[in-house]
Image 1 (cartoon, rainbow, N blue to C red):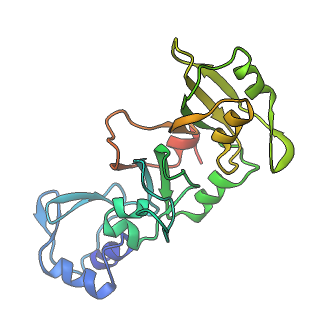
Image 2: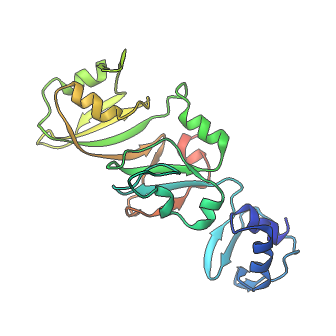
Length: 236
């Protein structure tokens, strides 16, 4: 692929912009400046540098963001800044989108991608992709809370019960609950806990599918996923 076309596919601007980025000497590969926009380069495993910052080539972008509280998972936010403002301009230009949504006050793992097929695979209700949440409760959990969540509770807008795939209490005070869900209803964790007579005071998502939020990824930071295999644990 021509070097200027490669930059275009990675969100570095218009074709005109990308041509002039290369001509300016801002692109290097293996420490060597490449300033010919028409140069043919191999994309496979390519990591180039843009003004000294490494940037891996990916035909499709898959991003993991550690979402802080106070951000909306929306391209057109209303009352709070968008999570998109936490990403570099190149990813916004590529039109990566959040995979589902987390509430404004919910923190943790948010995946974003410009791969429409992957987005559909992760969000379609028949796929049942698991998501793990860490909930801090207002009151100590009742003795039957975990059993009720596993058996299924009815929410006020749907007579069909929703249930957790796995539930466990993870502290002695019985106020920290870890739930695995395979459904994706609006405010589902909060509403399920409320239906059981308790309240969620803080909510954090720690995993989607097989992919867990990296320990070293601080709130507001993001990283690349090498492929969808990291999410599904199998070859796609």
